[in-house]
Image (tube, rainbow, N blue to C red; front, side, top):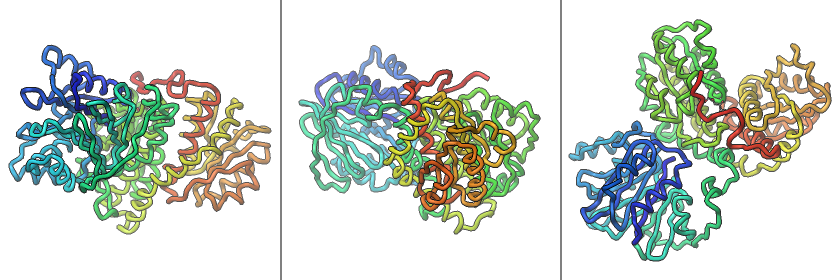
Length: 610
Ligand code: F6R
């Protein structure tokens, strides 16, 4: 989730780029940089941290020129640092590239380029692109870019400049958004509308597999194979704030809608070319270490802890290693048993949560190997862990975590499959079946997001209540806990998540006429038992909504007031789907209550106190 801006025209290029990058600041980033054609050739300035750091670097030595590209980076390959920041260049310093997305086969390409004498300075996948373009250049930058992307696998949006053709700016879109802004005697590129909105409202939206060649006075659109295309120009009438939210009313809703992309990005490069096997090249954990693991402890807080509950089921069922889950603030105080054969998995979107960090340090001090699942590459947790799996959800701005949670689920599924492969606890066919089902998840999420009306209406109904219950068994109980937390934190409705079978041990006393109960009934193996528990609350007059599969709707409607069907996947993967209506439910309930959805009371995006 990096940001790209590009400019060719007569204005002060550096100022246009910096202003554009400022408009992308809301997305969060860890470094920024620009490249400009100056009368001394292509000059690059970049700095880790806030944009202000880049601005102070440029003070006194501005880059003056007529075309340039800029970038804000959210680290994926390689830690945040000046050298890993974009734009990247090649050994001749004649080419410059900004890139959003992931080049899956960059290691292969890098090895090949090194063997051909190319010298690399950064840890990024992007640097490979500038070297490839330089290698392929034969007097025509468009052809060189086309040839280079022919070697690349993955998702990318690119802005490319070469000193040899200073009148051209080349842009490419392949599964990562990019727009072209049209001005008078000037043209722009942007990964997002806010980057260019202050200069023009006329845009072309590139589709996957398309590119554009910009000069000051023209824009040519073509496929990456070089066939020219025509496209209707769009007039953007969003205000600046709406533009930041991609047209959504709130960041939370935008991020809920970004989940299909977050799923795809988190899986990208971690499923081998056969599509049947998981590969986690980033792990230092050796096969021998994996075979020796005796127990696993998953430690996290809040939503990340709820992802850990699903992770526990995935690992226990696929790998048959005993797994404990702990909320981080409790972990240290129960004298956990840790040996060198213990794998501790810490989960944290921000990578800065004080409780999780403290628990992780304790586990490390006791000799555990610590693997972090985090969304922030350069975070304290990522730096201190022995191993890191980065979730590629991109920056999450709404305080309520949505796409980070579901990306954590994907990371857990990948990890469990990988451990199962190494320990031989699943057949290749079983692994392939799960991998195939995982790859279908993004589309299944899209299908639910396309039909929010039933959930919206139900959210308006529950928004008038002060108390409600979520119930479920097994993985449904894990998801119920996340649904309940989400609802509490942004709608301020009091809710409890209960293991459906546990209600009868006391809590049924609280079920009275009209109290809303949300029953998750997606796990076929325990469906009959869940239905019995639903009947217990039905008999006491509860107003019940079930989340289930289409084939169970008719049967359940005998005991519930309404039922919402989610698409079918493997039981283990169902949380990655069943949580989506619950996220929408809390969003719309919060909206109906007039709350500040993105900034709920008493909760910060990163909790750095114990
Ligand atoms: C809920 C929420 C919190 C966080 C928790 C852990 O939406 O955002 O419960 O999940 O504070 O934060 P991270 O994952 O950053 O460690």
